[in-house]
Length: 192
Image 1 (spheres, one colour):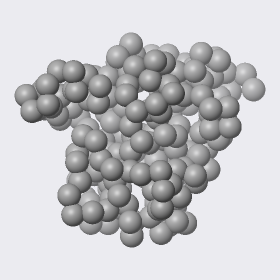
Image 2: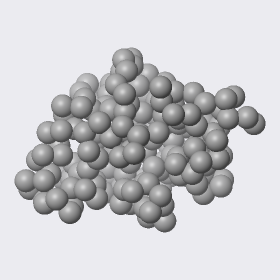
Image 3: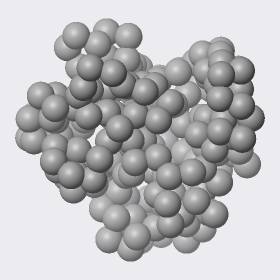
């Protein structure tokens, strides 16, 4: 397929080299009982279908969805104060450079009494692994994998999933590539 046929707004690349140019998106609550955790409407619909298929909300909780630039700045500043610069630069994107600002990223955790907001527990077993195995079919990729840290510039985040659309997610999963590599193949387009 040619790159122009593959591009859509779900493939926007957001990282330290590609800051996000804010745009209005329609946001919906991720799930009942979490009115303040929001995703872009198509991402929310696909997440709901995936969670319905696997019974996900019984064992998984949403931690963070859409964030404004202001909220990202607050998270970044708080993390610097509480955890230091080295930790923060590994796990918290600079304001303007967070995928959460697109409404296409969701952080998830295994349901338990205490959940860490910055590094939630999302193990590679049980319901969390079932989610991971079905994610691409619903358009989600595990965005920050250990083996791709040198490419993404972000430490491994097994809890962070990004909606890119099913055909793209399935292609990236089959090839074992990250979004930056997909772009490098000409399958993305710089946000205008």
